[in-house]
Image (cartoon, rainbow, N blue to C red):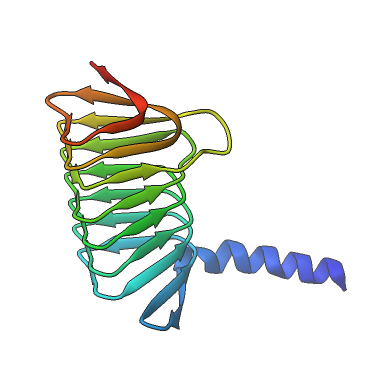
Length: 166
């Protein structure tokens, strides 16, 4: 009986998780599995238990992601928590982002407000700012690096990290 349950659980995980099941909570939704957002506006808070790929989308509510995010031409307008790596291309975050990624975070043609990097489970974290701007501070809970390329800049302080110009 236990084996049948395990097999059915595996099958459901394989076939249902990519569909992004959602359930409502207070003023938003929880999404179980990956979220692929294409030209979508989210006005309420969202919690995603999986990776996020966002293209031409806007997040107006608080965002909590238990997985990595890849944002292309997207905008985040409220404070966000991302427990995974960040990759922003031509995207904007107008509020504070707190992240606990594995190692690397990439900003390309993007702008962010404050960025706080929580202590990773292992290693150190690197933020690559390529033709992008962080309009505020970058705070590392554990030592980290900020690499600036192609006119990338940070207008505030880099706390507990070093800046490398490349």
